[in-house]
Length: 62
Image (cartoon, rainbow, N blue to C red; front, side):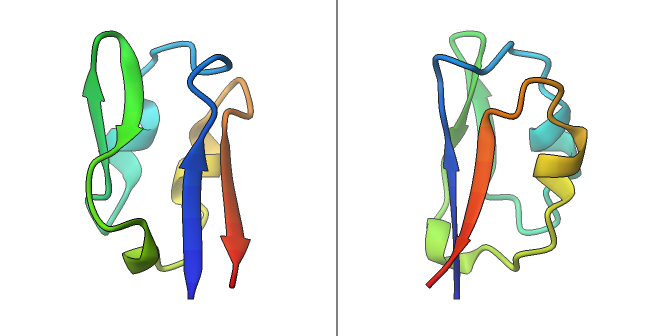
């Protein structure tokens, strides 16, 4: 199981991660990305981390 988290202070609001998440766990509001789904449904594919220009997203294996 993987858990995705977003450091909103580091998020630049580019929205690239929300478009790239195949599990649709990420959403965008107030100019920041947020986890909107069940973060435990993360597949660990790292699509979001690979497109994040600021390194605001981390994925941890539990």
